[in-house]
Image 1 (cartoon, rainbow, N blue to C red):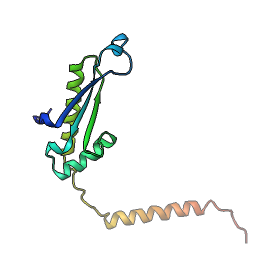
Image 2 (cartoon, one colour):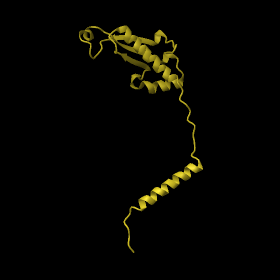
Image 3 (cartoon, helix red, strand yellow):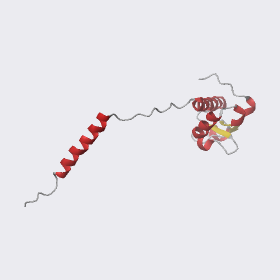
Image 4 (cartoon, rainbow, N blue to C red):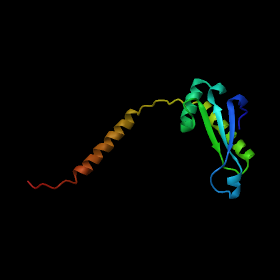
Length: 134
């Protein structure tokens, strides 16, 4: 995990009831966490913001709020840590730069091999036609 520090004013947590298995506990206790993050307060670079938009997808609202729902665990604290860890993982992934693609060209020999293979295949297929008797 990285040593990223997220300002508290950018975060807003809501505790809601979780769905799924858990018996009576699920109905009584608000253990799921909805973490709302104001992305503009994080001070991301334009490139990181663009990558975060594609990573987050529908979890990022039009107003720039990233919504992360964590309900994997039975306790509020565990879900809270999970939501923050997922946020940090998303931000770390958004900060990674894509490797530049180096354009390559096939060599003359490779082009010749390709053409030769096509010609050989063509003769095989041509031999499958009906034999004409003149």
